[in-house]
Every structure is written in C-alpha cells, then in structure tokens.
Length: 385
Image 1 (cartoon, rainbow, N blue to C red):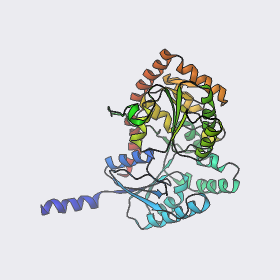
Image 2: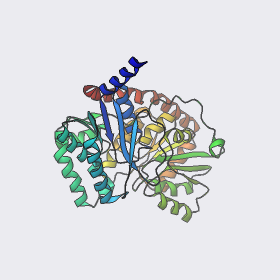
Image 3: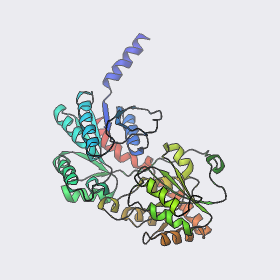
Image 4: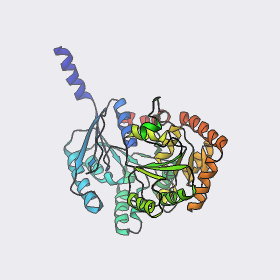
C-alpha cells in the first residue's frame, strides 16, 4: 500500500498542469469544457478558471478542477479591469506548464504571465473579437482591445479559431496560419429523452425553437417573435439568456403572443438537449450587421444538427454553406417578420420535405461531430504534453 501511495504522489508531480481561462461563468461554455476534456485525455492536470455571477447556474461535476471568481463588477470597463488584474495575479503564482487563453478578454494576463514565467501559451479566439456588436460605436474601447491584439497576436505560436472565414481575416491581418476547430458537440448517445408531456410541451403543436447563451441585439429574435402572429398551430420556445430577453418579453405582451411564445432560462447542457430534440424547426437568424456576425458559425446550428432537426437560418456565409451542403433546411432572404413567418409556414406545410431535412440532419450529425473535430485540437496540445 505504501509503495502504491508513493507512486501516486510521484505521478501527480510528473503530470503537466494546464490552466484554461475564460471570462464567462463556465456553466454553459461547451467549447471550453471540451478543450479541458481533451487536455485531460492527453495527460494534463487541468484547472478551468472563470467567474461566478449572481445568477450563475451551479456547476455540474467535472473531470477537472474549476475555479470561479466572485467579482465586485459584472460588466463594463470595471469588470474587465478587475477580472484581468485578478487573473494575472492568480496565474502568476499558480503552478502550471501550459496556459490556454480563450478570447481576447483573457489574453493580456495570460501573455504577461507567459513572458514573466517563461510558460507555453495557446490562444483560442472564439470570434473576431474586435468586431463584436457590443464594441460598435465605442471607438476608444474597440481601439484599446485592438492594440492588445496587435501587440500580442503576432507573437503567439499556436492560435485556434472557430471557422475558415475568421481564420482568413486573421491571416490577412497578421499573416499567421490559424488552426480551425469548429464548435461542434459530440455525437449524442443518450437514447432516453423526457417526453413533451414531462417537459411541459404541448403535444399538439409544432415547436419552433431558438436557443443561446447570448440572445442579444441583431440576432433576429425580435422579428421571429413578431412572425409568430402569422404562424398557426405552433409555439416558439426561446431558451437561454441575453441582453434582449426583457425586450422580447415586452414585444410578446404588446402583441398578445403569450400563448405562442415561451421563455425558458438557460439550461445545463444535457437538459437543453432534452428540449431541442422535440423541436420541429431550429432557428438561427443572426444579422449581417457587423463583421463578427457576418462570419459567425453559431454553436446552436450544430446542436440542432445533433438533435436531428431542420434549420431555418439567415444567409450568413458559414451557416449557409453548412445548410446547403447537407440540405438540412431553408435560408431566409431578409428579416421581415412576414418573410420569416412565410418560411416557417412553408416548412411546416410540407411534411415530406420536413422529413427529408430531418433525415439529412441525422446523417450530417455523424460527420459534424466532436469525435472528428477533436483531432485538430489534439495535434496542437500534444506538442506540450
């Protein structure tokens, strides 16, 4: 027994330690979760660092350690300043071999600690950060983040991003080749799902669904809600959280749509999927109002595919490419509520085509899965194992 314990302690010391950092509250970030699992498979001892908000969901049990910082500020300049400062000192004194920074808002402290302590750093850019709509019209803030990016980005060896379009933007700007790792969920092996009745879903209605951790401005949800005035025998489920939820609830009241639009707060990953599998159509209607949305590839698209449901999407480049390649749904021409309603009705009124979209989505799920995508991440992290 003594020999076994000694060996366990020795093995613990030999394990390389990776610290993964992100600014969100960890509970719904599946991309970062999958990154941590991949690191764990490669033999790293993993610590995931994020923040805890007042309305954060409890964290489920993980195969790796987590730390959520409770901050005084929850948004704006003071939040980013406080989080970056605290993250810097946390990383500075925490034992580690590899730093993994997620998005530009964690890059500065990670890079400074890399330089001070001579550590390895991998950067995962989940979006074209300086093009996010939250920075539109805020030139000082946008330029500040851009200065951080211009200083650090060219100096990093391994950079990951989420799709080909964003990789090209960065290559054109900095002359660097990025590794594209799409944010695709694993094949869903769960065979038993709660029934519509158990979930409180009307069994006699078509289910239109939109999910997301960031249901914000320019996601096309306001128009989708108004479109429900012209869609019969259907209920629109909005599952998640975001800046426009209160606006959407006001639109529902003003248009007397409380019987046709249902709001469900953000859910843990497994419970969210329970709702998604029952949808007849999944919506992803982001607008081409900024460079980040223009080249986005939303997580929910792949969630819909794994659930085997048809998709109605706006014509963003990366999204349209997936929809048309696998023939899993329809593309809108604009964001007029009347047009969105017509598209939904067209899909629901054609059961044969709707079934074809479902069948194709189920086939696409076998190809568009994390089991295939993960290999690209493994090739990067293996160099540091």
